[in-house]
Image (cartoon, rainbow, N blue to C red; front, side):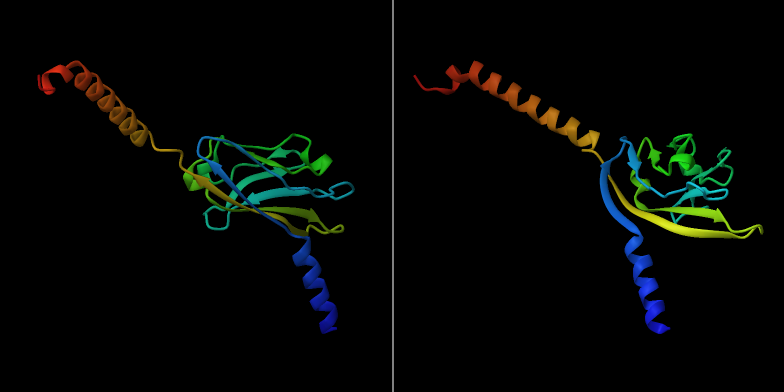
Length: 167
């Protein structure tokens, strides 16, 4: 019996897809999650980030998006295909990435069991997202200023070269 439980635990662990992605702020990401929803009764997909409260990033049910419990950091920035639950392609599109979006995103599928209203949850995918800051605008401005100072200094040095040379 213990061997069977250990084997089931290993299979569940192996079936969970985990990936890591690095992106820059301002970009968008498609976080892939696939689950065969054909023949599943009333499936719901929930994308979450456990270190947030509320933890829901996006939730899709058979009748459409359910975003009333969505974390406000993601309002207007998440999208899933309308036919996601029919095709099993549960990819989440997250736009206008921010450094604060860094974290682990989990795709979970909830399904109804039998005639009762009980549900079963299956954690399908974990995606670790690291959002990096682009080269800061103040650093770009400083570099441009430095280049301009060097160019102006070179022009002035060339122009007044005859005054520095003896003879």
